[in-house]
Image (cartoon, rainbow, N blue to C red; front, top):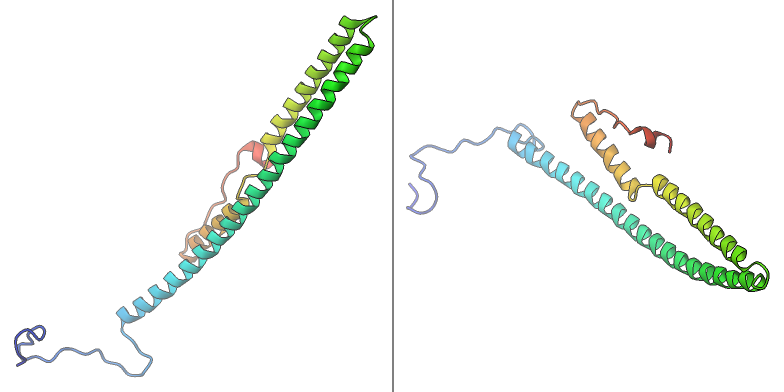
Length: 166
């Protein structure tokens, strides 16, 4: 009998050892651990790939947004200065003969431009693409593949009526 404190008492019985018939044969618990490790490694690799895709799309979106804002600011400043000087020119030209008509025409023109731009911006926001669409699509395909692999038939998401036309 082993000295006290060197492990659990054996009470005189030999521990049961699993039978192995070959060098590659393992027990169910060992196989489960190996499979779990492989699944964990595959999931970690998949998550890493998806995070890298998301990061790349975030950089592209921020870059696109920055360029869009700078371009819009430059366009707005240039257009406002040009329109202001054109307005002054038109009003000054007609000052002696039809000053009120010239002011009215310039005002109506600005209202028409504002209305056109407002409608254009409204339509643009209505049809813009979803940010990170590639990441969302990849994650949706991954989810459906996992469902198929465990024997569940995935269903396609139902899109609202206005998204089917895009």
